[in-house]
Length: 438
Image (cartoon, rainbow, N blue to C red; front, side):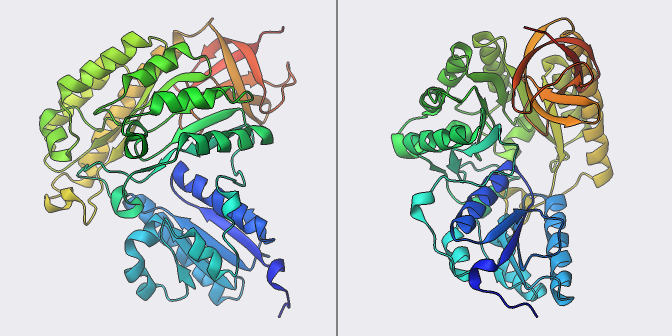
């Protein structure tokens, strides 16, 4: 058996789920490193003592992945490969009591807002002076910036308020401080995330203050791009789109999950909006900022969704021609408002409808990409893959959107640099480009 002092302990942090979890894991790892632990993120080595699993509990597939990961490391503990297994995050917040009984091999369970208690379990101190400091798991040139926690929206299908609690905005001065710290490390792009970014500021400033936040962050000199995610359509602050249109540092990009368009479905989903209001706000956004790319997500198979409801959504997607789009099949989640409804759309039909929407979006994306051939774009280089450099335009977020492919045999580019390119070709979800030599 190995002998070791407290500070020789090696910890592997495994992150599941969304960008909010990535942010939380980065904060956790910064605290652990400040306490002199050796920390790695999703290490493939087998020489760590403790694994901390940051779980997702959003929908069935995410819950299944989280549970399988916990079971995998619990088995590793049984075999003597891991000494401690600690679980945190959304799944633990939501199902702690049941999981403690079913998986006794786990040493400790923590919710989404229990970082100080987790650190105490590891005999580490929560260092208040490190608030906002993170150990980045993304490439250094971009980072997620969580502007608020929790959500006050009553959406029928969503369990996030159960796991993340009520909305709490982070003050602008704290976010600017975080942005400056990231910029000092080499970060050039900030991706603003929240459960509901349009609600930002209501709780601490008495008004929606997203535009002021965008302006303040853009004044951090070393930051070149600021990207806005997860906007709720009802009550959207249009001054944020105005700031986007006039401020060259704000990417012409908005992630605004709309979920459905049929009025009956929107009412059952408790979205607080209608088709007419949704169409009106999208039209206004496109008028204020014609350059803006809009990404949305939709849900198929919500309880009561008929073929006619779905067809309305399909036809609407065809007419709106969103730049980016993703689809979730409805997941019947206990303790949500929608759980009282009969989950009456079969899994097969849910998936068929999702596939139909995505096939349609593929055609739309191909046409949109084809129209960009010959244009000149500023591209941020993310990585090198085989014989190609892979980058993104301001209209694309990492992991989920289009990428720009550049032949590496003709150019030497540095990761994290901006380059100007001319678009020369396309597929449905990628662009091909050549570097414009300065």
